[in-house]
Image (cartoon, rainbow, N blue to C red):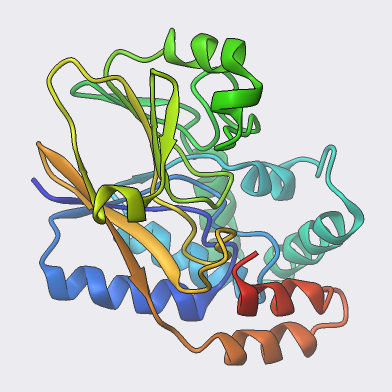
Length: 251
């Protein structure tokens, strides 16, 4: 079974639609979302509806959690975006649809184990909000040891918006170092991040996702109309213009 892994859409409908179109062209069997469907971007409802319709299951991201509950430890820009996003949910005139969306958010998974694979949004240790940064392999080896102690084989995460593979050496390999794909061995322990659909932070502005089968994962980048999203953000007073401008630079 070929599975597409998408993460950190962040209410960027244009990027999500481009990624879904590419997934369809590849004839992938199913899609899994690793969380942060909403937050930051201008089209939260449309993105949530697509994930509800297209994904086999989805994980709870910290921005999804923030809209349901409170944006704890968010900076001002992220907090304002969370409150604006919640307002969009509340102002849905169709009571049935409003209830359906909130129920979907409330039922997002925190952890999911499946045939040796663990799926979370952030990390196996703190699945909603712990970042696993590439620099951690050097600066925080004890943290990486604790994370890998919780993994049987493979763990798939999002949250940092940075694409790549962590191994238990520990080390980190971006897709460019892997030839665009990673093939795992039977004894490998790895943490894999497919990158961000809607807000990449690896200096590549293209939408990022991955496709895996039983033996490997392939990292894929997709062009989309970033300027259209920048203009949508500018048109919403409650969203900082920075949230659009950062997309142009992939940061």
